[in-house]
Amino acid sequence: MSLTIVCLPNGTPTDQLAATAATRLSATPLTNLGSAGHFITTTRFHRGNLLQPWKYTAAGGPVRLLDLDAMRAAAHRAYWYRWHIWDKVVAGTRPAQPFWTFLDRHRDTPYKYPLAKAHRHYRAQPRIATMLTYNALPNRIMELPTSHLEAFQTGAHGYANYGYLCAVPGNHLLCLDGTHLAATSDQYALHLAYLAEANHRITALNHRDVLVALCTS
View 1 (cartoon, rainbow, N blue to C red):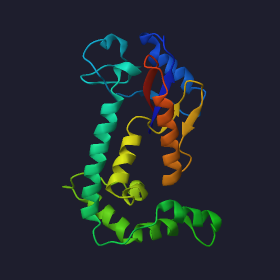
View 2: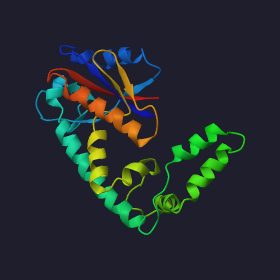
View 3: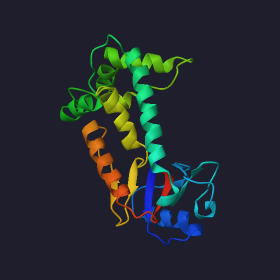
View 4: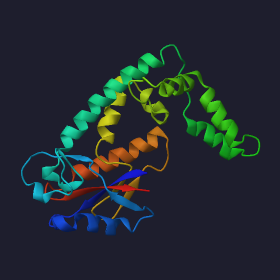
């Protein structure tokens, strides 16, 4: 399951936000699984203009009623904290290679280097093994996603800034002009390129334009 953010133009009726977002999504390979309470809202008022408001969250609404800055700041803090937990967990281990490097080797020579061997070599790296061991603990403080390996290895500030960029766009962004943005690979550089473009598109929206969050597959 993934999170898709759909941009809708100013003037889209509130009672049609979910249906309009679903219609736009139908032009992509994604399947709509329903709205997601992804956004922090800015006010207790004007809740009639929000999609599925609940306490301080909503599944969508005009940009002016969504506190995107608060979402980014909260993610920055959370990723900063997670990095320090990760740093203590992996202390003394060597930097590891991300899984995509092993996957590329498999794709280059699939018969000589089977996928099972790629998985085995990836997981055998001491840093990855240490993260997996920690994630298996029933009393762990939080999950340390191995998919974040490259981002973790950029350092505390780099990882916190990564969290800031991840906070709003989700895994896919459907822009106002119909452009479908998504990360084309698990490679950190490519995911970062997606996040940079997605955040640029979101920041460029008019404050009366609308964002809707959908769970997708």
